[in-house]
Image (cartoon, rainbow, N blue to C red; front, side):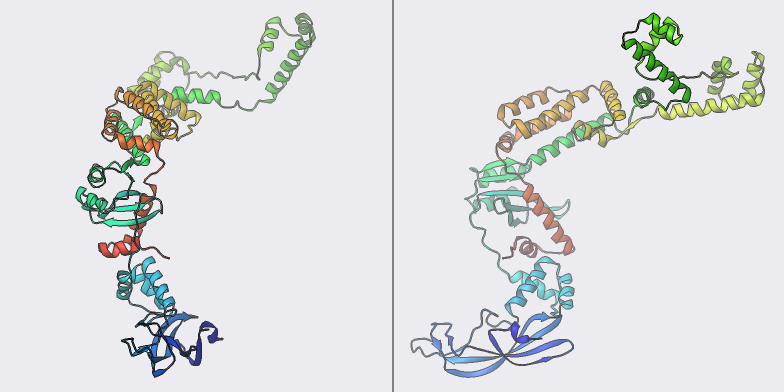
Length: 518
């Protein structure tokens, strides 16, 4: 291994490779160094001393540098510093015990991982650093200046869920977080905004506190409510309405049989038997002869069929299915048997009753018939139960669901029973069209008028909420900015909190969230 290649600005005096580390003895090439006070070059050496510095590991072996440093005389008579130590700021800072590249590597670990995890990783790389040292590295790092932001977004985040909340502010142009506030109160938000008068546009959710804080702290800024939160609020109102209408499950038990029959009629016909295939071939030949211009009388004589049969064959467009009706000896007594079964009568009792009415078959024949009848009744009862998923209904209302043929029949009948769903679907689709396509003030006012005229209280509440924040909603139609970047940084903040098991104080959390790697 050529260790000199790692330290091209130095003269490698000697080295020693141990099982756990590498000891390197170095000396600088330069014969002169500038004075740190007056920057005058000096080559007159006062003395020499050894300095111990730790470098980044090589092959997972920790590297210890023993640098032979020099002290110089400053030959500038007007300089107050008579003796100075040579600087190597390209490699390490004054008084540092680590090289710049090792400090940079440890800083990356500290800001990316929790202190405990970063400690474990540093041990595996041959540069063991304690968790407290990582916290010290993070806390001493200076945050960059945020400059003069013009377009920002604000949202809240939980310091302790359901108890304490803070605020995060992001620069939407740079897509980076620029501030973490310890609370979301009107005073805290307005004070921060007063300190940054350059802000022109602010995006937010529907929070009343944020709206008031922005008006007090930056009254000239344009407030834009987040479009995703508008859809989310409307979705919550739709969900509340469905839960009020159906506290438990949505059932359409009395409609399923008709639906199944209609669906069954739309399914493909079963495969034809040999006899049915021969008959269909005959019908097709008859139709072909008639289409060729042959008279009906000639077709009748050629195929030896009746005139009524010919007319029936000419009207057919698909193969006729031969259905054989089965008859059971107990069918004439079916109504009596059903009535007795509803009264929970036993089979021997039913047998004695219909025996008096003229039934002349055996008990086992009747028993088989009643068993099949009971099974059929159970199937009919199970068929009559339809449970409609509330989530599927909401997806259908929002046009996010492409229903199957059976689902479409179910929703059609559900909408006929509850006609307010027609109105609800029109309101939702109108709001979607307003946000995505129309984007003008008059369309918004028309939609609000229709929503307030509806018979659904939840929709009226949503329309009233829109009116209380009407200016911010109008701006959401005209401007493309949204709170999506802020939501993403809130999610990143949660990840950082979980990495540290939720024990980070605000100063440490702010450093990890707001720090930007060069």
